[in-house]
Structures are given as C-alpha cells and as structure tokens.
Length: 232
Image (cartoon, rainbow, N blue to C red; front, side, top):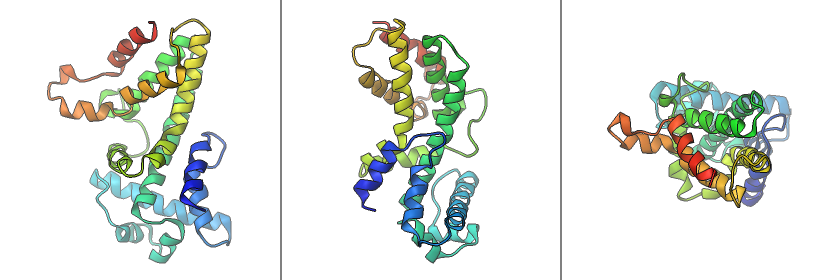
C-alpha cells in the first residue's frame, strides 16, 4: 500500500464498528498468514508502547524497549510498522477512536441540538486537557501522544489530519444539526468545525504556557466564548 493510499484510508475510516485505519495498514504490511494472530501481535506492540508511555510520561522510548516489553521480535515489529513514528501514529489513532466513542455517548444523552454541541465541546476539552476535567479520561496518558502529534504535523500534516478526521466529522454533523434547528448562526459549518477544533484540541498546549491558573482556558469558559461567536 502506498503512503497516499494509507492516508486516504485513514481519512475515510469511521469510528464505531469499522476496523481502525492503523490496524488495516499494519495488517496489510505483514505476511499473509492468520489474520487473528497478526492482530494479536500488533496489539501486543501497541500495549507495550502504551505501557512505556504511562510509566515515563513521554514517548522517549526505543523500538527495542517496545520489543522487550511486548516479548516479541524486532523482525515481527518491522513486518507491521515502518518505524517508531508509524507506531506512534497508531497510538494517536487509537486515542482518537477512544475519544470519539466517548463523545458519541455523551452527545447521545442530549436531545436539544445546542446542548448536544455544548456537550461535545466541553467533553472534547476535557479529553484534550485532562487536568481541567473532573477525572482522568482514557485508559492511558494522552499528553505525550498529543505532543507527538504536534511534532510530526510539521513534516507529515496529512497523516495527523487523517488521524484526527473522526472528531472533525462528528463535530461537523453536530454543528449542522444545531444550525438546522436555528440554534446557531454560521455560514459555513465545515469552517466553523475547523475553528472549534483549533480552539479546543490543543488547549493543553496553551494552558501549559500560562502560569496563572486563573487565566487558563477551562471547558466551560471555552464553550461560553465559542457560543458568543456561534450565535452571531
């Protein structure tokens, strides 16, 4: 599979019942043997990498450490992943999948279109900056993976955009419903979705460089700010 086709596959993959795009890529790279066994091996590498990230609070680990932790082979690793960046992109996609499933659940609890948009925005902020939320979200430490996404976006923005696509797609749908109900006044919901993502997704970065905690962006504060713009 070429890099362009991998990006296209990642961009079109949906959350929920569909197989994650990273898993499709990894399995397609490996030998054409038992698919179930291949998926088990791939999952082993991912779990080892997550374990190292949770332990160290960073992505500063080597492929050999992933091999040792997973108790699998280096040769097997390169059958499924092109290198460490490919592995970290898979971790990013897994984190996005987990986030999207939670967002779908919290939005489903609301009936009013504007409340659905609020629930989406607040919960996404809590995922992006867990220090601002009432509890830790997700099974693993997400901050190092977010930092990695910023770094790799410099040279490979298409892959990062493809990994983040499920969140953008869902937000666009929620915005369309809110506009159709007359709850917001925006001319272009796709552009508005992009602006909201830019505001919320990397709130953790902005909050890290603001020393005064009273000045840091909170989930509710961000929603109130966005709501003023959405209502025209």
